[in-house]
Image (cartoon, rainbow, N blue to C red; front, side, top):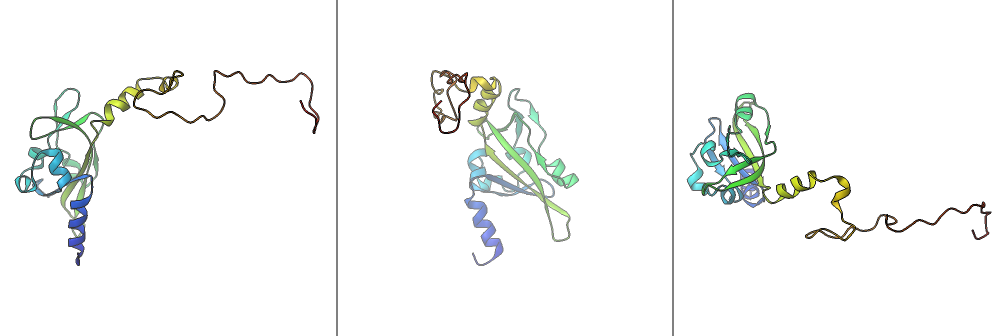
Length: 178
């Protein structure tokens, strides 16, 4: 860990997010263990391959192929962020919902020298989020108790099922019970 490169290498190997870096032509030069697990490619197998082969994106609902995320980072020098319903088609053919970004890598002259793609598996989160978005806000909790798989909410005030005390018709004076 004596050099910056050594620290960066250990950091990239250790983080939970998947990371793939490419050269300026979109050819993979690095794939961390999290990326290997999600894509189904080992780092050795992915090295030298085009990103579009190892990281093919599809529309999560239709299965339609989506363009690789490198045009903006490599051609425009701008960041790219995946929109809803983006899935990674793993090497084994399984589609995995992902959240991802791609950014340009710049050399010491400020020129685009490659790109880095950072992504994570959101396949378990998306169905729950979609289910919750489709329900009205008042339907997110049940008066019969919490939904299965959720924790009960702490009370933030009186329950709507418990009547509030009625206001007294006479005014209360300080120090006297009302």
